[in-house]
Length: 349
Ligand code: NAP
Ligand code: GDD
Image 1: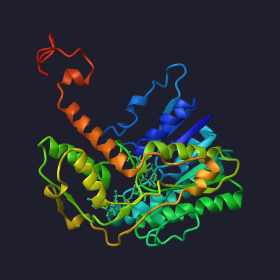
Image 2 (image 1 turned 60 degrees about the horizontal axis):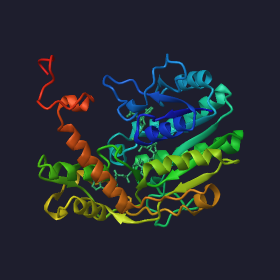
Image 3 (image 1 turned 90 degrees about the vertical axis):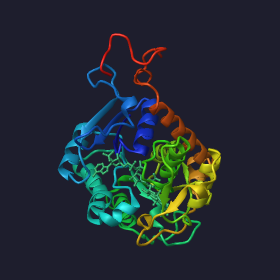
């Protein structure tokens, strides 16, 4: 089996690449050309493409470049396409609404159109989002009406509908995974969970005194990302394309997540958390709590890690990562742990 993943350098893309490589897939990833390396989350998966039996291949491209997508679809001829690429930050989408619409929304249409124009017979997964439900109160499932509250949510709603349209109009195998928030130690540092757990580690180590946050009252349904990429894969193994919610069903406020994370590190959060209005959004999504019973019934998928455990996993990982940062350079590159600082024969390090 051969898969193409857009967004392979992101949180979900990195876990999905691991999962598919573990299943014996040949994995192709779309990466953006940048002036600095942006492959940190998948460096551990890197294989020399010249080596016999290499299974991971990276290609430069961008969801704003439709011609490039057609060329790549022709060249790769994948069995499965996972469209995870997006400007995925809701707050940023208010600052960059046009770019968000172009990549997160129209980008999905470009990729679907590339599949169609290249004549590739493949299954397509669209990374749809619970942000599409926006102001519609919980619990939310596949039948819940959309009421997006951000340029990001509106762009995802466009991508959702264009995915359904290619399924109905052209008979394509095109599925929407409507995923509620999912996090991990690989979560981007500006999403609230990771911002909190990273701050806990830094405050505990004496590197920071405070963390500044916005709305603590928002309710989210936070699950564990590696379980959610398994759900994505299961969706594409179904006989028919469909739309599925993935969620834990739990409801935690941002404040609850803060309290759990600080408490796990033995600290009282109220001493360290401060308010900054710059983290508020012009329109907020007050509550997202998912009902994933369809995914359980049809795919046998169920979230195991609940939000409190997730918070502890992320705090432990950030504390450990920070300890690692503080270790001497020879430890980090895997050389023997010399008893004295500095390695023999190497000067100026
Ligand atoms: P992420 O960590 O922000 O990763 C986004 C990925 O998209 C990165 O690889 C990024 O590349 C890439 N990308 C950004 N702009 C692009 C463009 N113009 N062309 C091609 N690639 C582009 O997001 P994630 O948390 O893994 O989420 C994966 C997908 O699921 C996203 O579509 C997100 O909107 C959606 N989603 C996420 C959640 C969640 O809770 N995590 C829930 C529902 C839906 P760089 O590394 O170069 O920036
Ligand atoms: N990022 C951030 N930073 N959010 C904060 C902060 C802060 O300092 N303080 C409070 N929040 C609140 C936000 O207002 C929001 O209500 C909640 O924390 C979660 O914010 P994010 O972690 O940025 O995630 P999100 O829910 O807006 O969006 C994520 O989940 C969507 C699925 O529901 C992203 O991963 C989207 O890509 C995804 O589609």
